[in-house]
Length: 442
Image 1 (cartoon, rainbow, N blue to C red):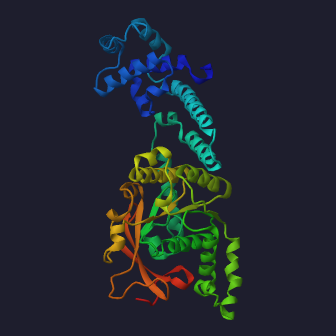
Image 2: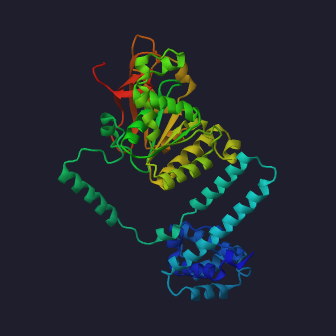
């Protein structure tokens, strides 16, 4: 392999640091055997790791004894090799210097292997498969974050200063606005503190209960405030979403539009409805979207268009990687859930993901949903910062979402940054496919 893909001097220097007692820094940086190109260096590091895990000294004497017991001492060059490596590292505090060099070589090796695998799979691949391969490679490169910086002392000074500055600003201006991006619904903002960067919000409900309408209502409020939004719709086309947004924004009765019964009075509302074309909404309606393509496109939306919120409709329609799909639906949904949280942290934006509930709840009597009703995987509940359920309050009347104004509650079942187990009441205007704050309707 070309010398640019490995650095034997750096490998030996890092082992020398470990032999002098600096292995804690390498472990904190996430170092494992894959960081070493030379097999004998891998073997020595694994011995050092084992000694450290057993709370034994990683000094030269202990390491020589362990290597001898494993019949590895002669293979790695004998005691003189370890002495030479110690000389490569003047002190135990040289870890960051060697780590930065090894990290670069490791990234090159891993990316080369990924690219070679991609080339091998390109033969006979469809356009969609190629898109997925390229997105996978891009995400791989961006996921290889530099652990080296983490070995340096990290304190809370800058974070505390930032928080204090924001608290002082709120105190001086008596601001009651949420810390995150406002949803436009005051009771919801009071409960959540707004949509916080790096957080994942799940809105779940039965089919046809208004999950998309709720997401679009929040998106509309954010868009009116001037913040761009990125939306990935795996169930509805861009045209269908646009018609819903037009109806919600202009009080345009889409039921009459669909039936061809639009009155002249309703037709006049079209002027306000078309204002949505100025909204900075970036929509992707690919039905074959997988988690790698989603992360790639979401990154583009944030970097190129400044999107402040990402919405996904809906989670269980997303595809995982081919490996996760082979393992089963539970593992696939778990992988997707983990990736959404990683994506939220990576892009530093809130992510709203819609989700379906288990079929058992869909078929049973009406009741308030619980976290265990989330369909597909317990990882959704675990990875999400906030989980909310749309449900109709208990009533003797049969639910009817096709006409009139209905009361629907958004039950905040999990809320990592606020109060959980609370219901927030909304008016659902079916003719406009829009949620409004509760008014006189009880």
